[in-house]
Length: 120
Image 1: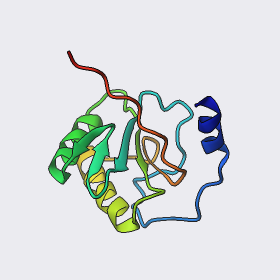
Image 2: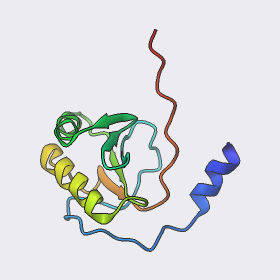
Image 3: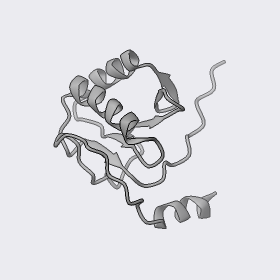
């Protein structure tokens, strides 16, 4: 598993760039353990591992925008179509009042999801 993760880190970023506003940065923080991760889950956003409608994505992003200090929001954009990425980005930036140092788009391969916590 560690070798697979290291292999993902060494892959070059795909030659892809979606049209996002200046509120989005491209420098992914080195420490991403506490970052909010947004990815496409087959036409519906995933906030971490939680499925999020557009309204839920807006609610989650709004809450993240009120965090002090800000935790990074990383939007993984390697796999989905740019139209999907741009839709998610517009929702997030409007709700969270993004800035390029903590709202970041990544065009590298999306890392595997962490195992969700077990509820008893």
